[in-house]
Length: 274
Ligand SMILES: Nc1ncnc2c1ncn2[C@@H]1O[C@H](COP(=O)(O)OP(=O)(O)OP(=O)(O)O)[C@@H](O)[C@H]1O
Image (cartoon, rainbow, N blue to C red; front, side, top):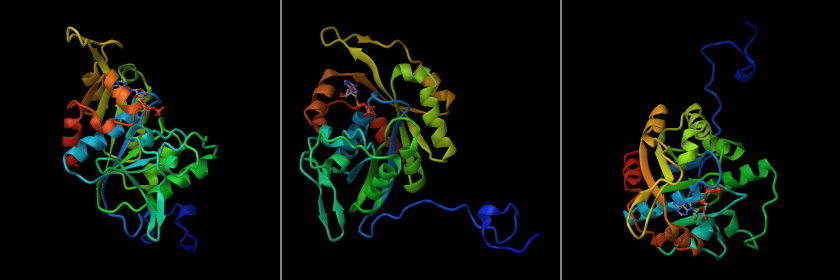
C-alpha cells in the first residue's frame, strides 16, 4: 500500500481512515427552521404535478400546519399562478422573504423575482441548479412544518440537485392513468430509490370524470389498474383526483385555496406520519 494522501476519492484502499462519501447537502439559512421536506415529482410534464403540490400544501394548511412551497420548476414555474400571487418577493437583512398566500402558505418561485411574469428563463443547467439551492439556503423559511418542493418533470439535472442538496424526507409521485401503465413513472420511482429517498406514495390524477348530471364515473383514459401498478413498485396509492373543470378554473384564477373535495386526505395522513 502506498503512503496515505488522505484523498479517498482517488484511492481504492478500504483502510481505517477511509472517509464517508462526500455529502452535497446544503445548510438552510440561520433563520430557517424546516421540519419536513416533501418533493412532488412526475415522470413527464402536464400530469398535474403543480396542481397536486398546491392541493397538498392547502390540505396541510387546512390542518393548521405551517406550510411552505419551493417552486423548483425554474423554467416552468406555476406556483404564483395557482395561488394568485403577483407581487414581488422582498429581501431583508436575513435573506429573501417568501410571499404569503391568502391562507398563509409561504411561496418562493422564480416568477416572484422576475421583473416581468412572462419573461422566459433562458438559463443554463448549472445556473438553474444554483437557483434551486439558493431557494433553500437564502430564503427565510421560518418555522415551516412542511416544505413542498414542486420539481420539474422527469429525472434530469434539477431533481438530482434537489435530492442531493436538500434533506428530502419523502416524495409524492403524481401520475396520470396512461403514465402508470408505462415506463416513465418507473424511472421517477427508481431514481428516488437509487437516491435513498423514501416514497410516500402515488397520487393518480385525472383518474376519472364524474358526470355532473347523472353522477356516473367515466374512466376517460381507461382503467389504470393503479393499485396493481403501484404494488409493482411496492408503493401505496395515497390519492385519486378526478378530472374536474372547477379545479382547472380555480388554478387559472389563482384560487386553488378554495378547492373542494377530500381527495388528498390519505396523502396528508401519510405525510403527517413521516
Ligand atoms: N384533475 C384535474 N382536473 C382538471 N384540470 C386539471 C387536473 N389536473 C391538472 N389539470 C390542469 O392541467 C394543466 C396542467 O396541470 P399542472 O400544471 O399541474 O401539470 P404539471 O404536471 O405540473 O405540468 P408541468 O410539470 O409540465 O408544469 C393545468 O391547467 C391544470 O389546471
